[in-house]
Length: 480
Image 1 (cartoon, rainbow, N blue to C red):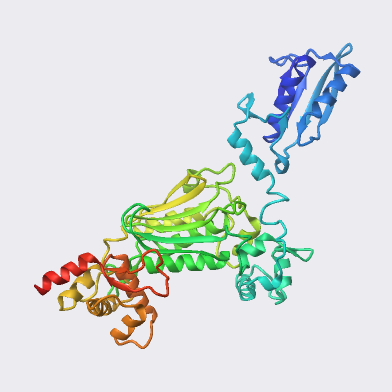
Image 2: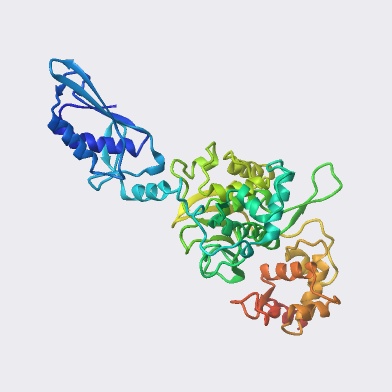
C-alpha cells in the first residue's frame, strides 16, 4: 500500500497505481503521511473530477475501487485500489509504463514492456488459439490425429468412449472451436505449411569441428508438424551420435549406449517443439551436432518469472502454448509439472554425462550437451584382420554391430571411385539399400572417412559418395 499526502500529488499516485496494475495489484491512499500518520485532506467535487480524468489516461482502460473514510472535521482519507489483472497487462499511464521495485515506483524498461505486451495476449488471443484461416480437416494428418487418440486412451488421459471422428477428437483437445480449426491444430497435425506457416521448420545439421563454419557433413531443413518433428529429430540424433559399448561389472552382456541419454535429448526436443514462439514466421527448431557438443535451439524466450538458472532446479510449469503442450501430454510424452529439465539432468548424471547448459541468446533458448562426438569408437567388437577393416573398426561409429565388416566392404568398393548408394549396395552384395547400409554409410561420412560429391545437397538424387582426400592419400601410400 502506498501513502500520498494530497491531491497535488495525484499524478505520482496514478503512476504508482499503474505500477500496481503491472504487478499483483494494490492501493494508493491519499491523506496519510509517509510515516503513517493519518491527517486526511479536503475532498471536493473538483477532487473527484480530477481523479476521474486521471483514470482516462490509463491504457488499456482500468477498473478501480474508491473508498472514502472521514477522519476529522471535513477531512477524508481516499483509497484507490486495483486488483491483479495479468491477462490484460501491461498498463500505461499517460503513455508510459511503470513498475514497482521494492518500495519505489519507476519507469518500466522497454524490453520488459514489450515482453509483457506479448504475454498479455496469451490468455484469450494467443497465437495458437487463433483461427487458422482456410484450414479444413482434409488438410490435416488423419492418422496422426487417430494416433493421438489411441495413445491418450492408453495413458488414461482421454475416455475410451471418445469418438473416432477426427473433428470430434480435435474438439475434445480444444483444437477446434465452434467448427473452426485453430493454428494449434495446424502445428500439431498439418500436412502443408508453405506459404502460410514457414515457422513450422526443423533444421538438422552435423558439422565437422566446433563451429557452423566447419564442413557440413549432413544438412536437412524441412517444414513438418510437431509430432513428426520430434520423431524426425530423434531419428537424426540416433543416426548421428556414436554408439559406444561397455561391459558393466559383474555382467557378461555388453551395454550399448549413446554419449548423451536418448531420453534426455527427447525431453529437451519435446520442450523445444512445445514451448517455442510460433508467432514469428522466421522462427524454427534446430538440432546442431558438432565434434564437441549437441545443441538444441528453439525460437522464443522463457515465460516471465522463469530464468535459465531455475531450469536446473525447482520451477513451475508455465506452458507458452497450452493447447500444443496439452496434446503432447495426452499422449503420455510429457508431464505438466515442470520436472522435465530436472529429469534430464538426473539422467545425464546417472550415465556419467555432463548436465546440459541452458542459455538465452539471440532470441533463442539454447540447450547444449557437452560431449565428444567424433573421437568415440565402438568398444567390445572383434578386430578384423585386414588393414582397411582394422581402420574401420577403430574409427566408424555405427548403430549396427556388424558395421566394421560392412564398413570395410563399403571402403573397398569406393576405392574404384565415387558411387551412388544404390551402386554401393550392389557392390557389397545387397539387393537393396537397407537400414544397415544407410547407417554404415552415414557413420563413415560423420567420421570423415567418406564424403559427399554434392556436399551442399546431401539428399540430392544425384548424390554419390567417395573417399575423402586423406583416405585416398592413405590408400595410395599403402599401395606403394
